[in-house]
Length: 199
Length: 330
Image: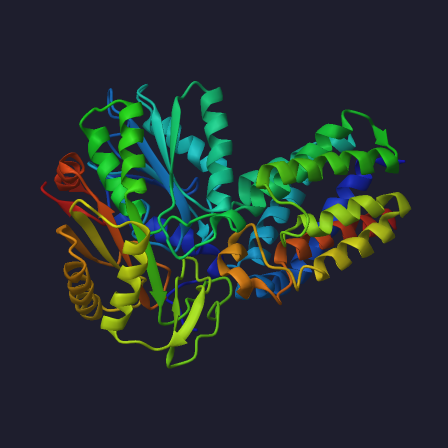
């Protein structure tokens, strides 16, 4: 079973991973975006960890709803509303249970990913964060390790795609040949589940 | 790349502190990142709120003042502001007559303004929105995030601002803003990439002797790279792209806009070429504005925006305006 502590560890591990990989995310965002994905997510997850230290959250749902709200209020751009909605809607789907099973979490994350697709209008293959999140949700039944691998493969598989959503889409065919920064950061988020569960 | 900054993290806050010092006629909330007319809310008048990533100065904060915006929300560099800022701005300028959000068509701006509109309506503030999407370089809107909002934003903010200042109702101010957007088209070129403070080096590599055609205003490359062209050849290409999309029947407003690092000397020379092409194509020019208004940090290059106007839009364009970035008639 996964408790509120697990979800706090997930957010802390994501924050650490985003700090570590910020330069790479920004570098991926340069040729097909506007070179700020790393710094924007860093600002957001710094706010998330600060809020989780300050405010009390005693259920998994409360942790994720608070984290999502922080992202919406601090990140800006498209990433803020999209990542914020992902965590907020996943948290809402978890309700107010003190502990949730891995299967319940997988179901809730699926609801979160659906909400992101609805908000941003992206489908799989559009070269967005969805390309990492959808395979991750599908693999979550086989454990966090499998989900992390699926997300990373999904992110890598965005390289030959032509972007159809977000700022990279303005480039047309010139977006081909670059890995999507949003899919890459989504893979970091999913990989952090493994780190949170490993403790 | 050398920059006149302290550290990248405080670039936006530092600029706002400087703006506050230079413009006592504006209320600049540095902490919450909102720039508001000091005399807001204007009794009985519609409030106009815009915003977007920083790096496009004077857009949007430099267009706050009588005859134009009531408030602006600056985000991080090239990053949409957050809903909290827009909500704060809307509350500050709402007199009860409602608030118009002027939103450039980028995924982030649209999502954040939509969230803010919901929050504002929950607080009893009537919100209307207008989307600016004038950039003809984005050709296949079905498979992209759609046309970007660029130079026409200035026309929308000025003309809708004049309508709001006259006390026109929200519905009317919104329809005027929409009319301006629907009658505007833009095309931009870059002679160099720009450097964001966060990255510290150019966003893309543009070798000497080449230029990018069809750029946006966020340092993203354009649709096509070509060998360097003359000012006249660029004007031919850009004006044709604009007119092919919207052949004007009425006189037009022309904005020859610098991207940030191109001197006025070059911009005026470019304007001469733009006017030549417009004359050749039989387009009557009512008014022309030349300068750095919708910029992309230190990018070199220019954009051309054409807005077809009727007598009413021209009257609103000519109405007095007094903002840090645009000022006439008062």
